[in-house]
Image (cartoon, rainbow over all chains, first blue to last red; front, side):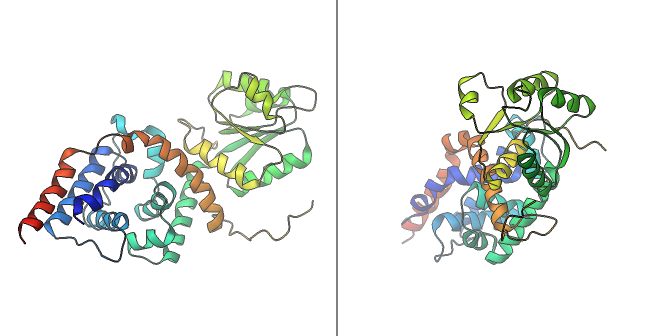
Length: 266
Length: 62
């Protein structure tokens, strides 16, 4: 089977990965082109024991490591950078960023990522944990919890702290929520819908979003109220009873992709 | 308060590998959406030309 037949189907994904890794399409494409030229010239062999896709990514890394791994300067004026998410990716050190993107974006197993990066699976696991620590530190913010049930509020608070965030306040009513944001601006709001005094978490969130832009995750036993009513954007929705992992994943997603984020007050 | 039984212990900094993987998959899914257009646009012609040339060279050289 020729190179074209073996590698061409994987090039769209290779380009995606290269762009995510370098922060820019032009830079990513330059590395992909260099990798293909090295393969074509016979300077880089495709290891026969690897699948073509794994082999292609492996050669790409050999080229990237050898030349430009340090040149991660993202030009903010470049429209292909996708703004804040790309900047957050670039803040993860190159090696951890590779392990993170190979597994989470490209769907390689840790064993395959190890073949690509020429390290063991356990080293890949370490790199993935390091990437997560970096992401957690980058996303750390202060969180407003709008929840009137003390036990659930305590669960959510513990989970939020486990992720490395501060809890700005726990508000049981719309009024308390507005008082809390008047004192300090949160970087994330987690909101129940039906509140203690009969007030609505949706109204509280609408009031808050009228003052400033903040990612919001609704955690509710009544998701239909959000589906039928006008749902303020941008918001996420989690149904009670919730799995802690689901809430954690949603928090990471909401913060990672939110365009502008309030930092923890210094 | 009642402790949830037998949850894996975590180091104060960072998540367990399993926990980290779940959270990274959530971010990865959104990244795939973000980069959808890259996957769907045509691959630059010169990339394909490099591979075709190499194939022609190796089959012609035999």
